[in-house]
Length: 72
Image 1 (cartoon, rainbow, N blue to C red):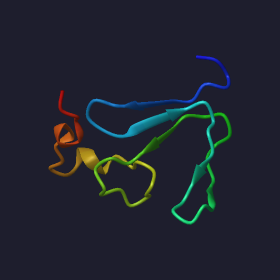
Image 2 (cartoon, rainbow, N blue to C red):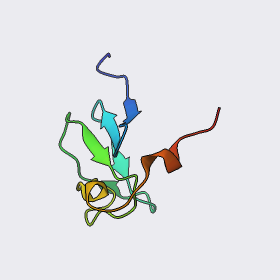
Image 3 (cartoon, rainbow, N blue to C red):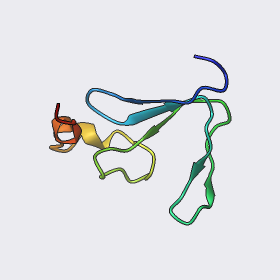
Image 4 (tube, helix red, strand yellow):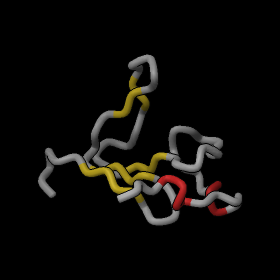
């Protein structure tokens, strides 16, 4: 992966992993602070207390990651 390439991966049982230090913004276009150059993880289950970031809550609740899988 090059320094300018942004990579977003779905982890099998949890969050989206965002790599390459891409900026993150809220619904109003305001920047959300991330650690420069470090990967961060975005919540997929909707139950994180630190949204939009994953806090591991998906491991404590009955969340089925297959619900977010795409068909075909």
